[in-house]
Length: 465
Image 1 (cartoon, rainbow, N blue to C red):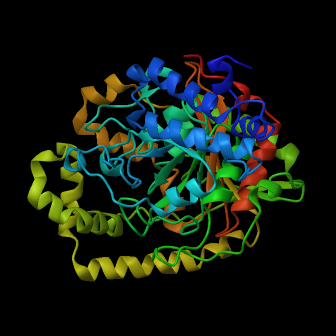
Image 2: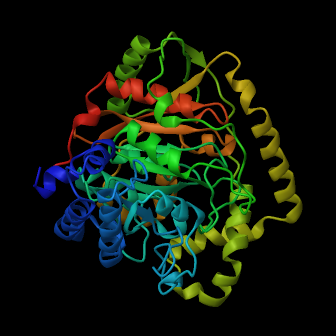
Image 3: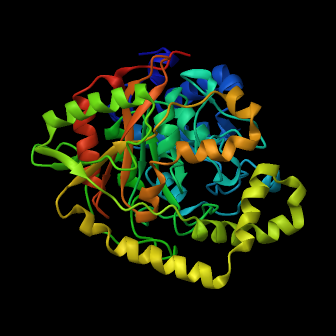
């Protein structure tokens, strides 16, 4: 297997097996990704910074270690990209904003340190909606990211570049962040897997925040098993992160092979199935029929939906207040407008809403007294075209709120949630299926997602660039 395109089409797990067996080299694998970035990213615009020299240096180190039988595990020598909101020592972290255009962190984020311990190769930093404050990926100092499946359409946001890079075969996994759907929305738009872990399962230390109370960090991959491998490496309590939570340890890579025929699934139709675009509805209905064959029981369920944005607005404003005072001219106008809305929140309002959030989360486990997992569409409508959004900038936020409608409630509750491809529209635009579990039940979420994936062919489609 010498062709760069063939290498880039491998799943992460298959590439890992070939690296472990010394059939392929980390250097060849990394160079194949770099070649693909060079060939196609001019139009897709997935990357802000490509760290080619350091990536090849890391790949050569991995090659020596594997040759000397010092294999670290399934991420050893695997090229991975990072959303450009995650700090990397010596490599700029811009958050896709002119405000941080020249910001070079002195330390790696906690998640980057974990990936480096596992021997992963860091390819570079991916594009995003500026400061992660949006679901379209259209607002960025470095320009919009385009969907690899249909380049006139959005890749979704805010982790737009991370999703596009994975879908386009420019890396074998990427790390994104998810405050209202920013991993799952672009993953669904780009026909890949996106996992938002349980709140606090993965450390957010060293990640530029949008809202501490809702921010999650997680993987984007082309296969569910690949997401399990990455989550296994990055999950774990971090005493240096005040948002970190302790959960019972799980072996996610082993759990995905478990039997799903005992699982009771709840289909959350109120709110989540309302006003679905017809092609999306058809794809989801087909997916439910498949789930009936891999689960024990499927019945209707309900879920409380809190649409209040007081906490997010206040926390976003708190982080950016000083930067807005000193560099307001460097923000994209739409980002500045959104941030300034948080200025109106009083301390009393914030405390009250923050307390209400904790009450909701404390009751989250009770939602699963009758069900093991909850099922919804990931996004109620297909990804819109770039031209459509750019022609009506005054409507951008309202359009994004529709795109994020089905993902945000799971950030509020802090539940582990995954999206994976389940179909396509008549125009060939991807549709995503969303699976959610009880707090800390990430393994079971991955288990059902893997079972569904194996029962369908959607994961076998390759993005033809």
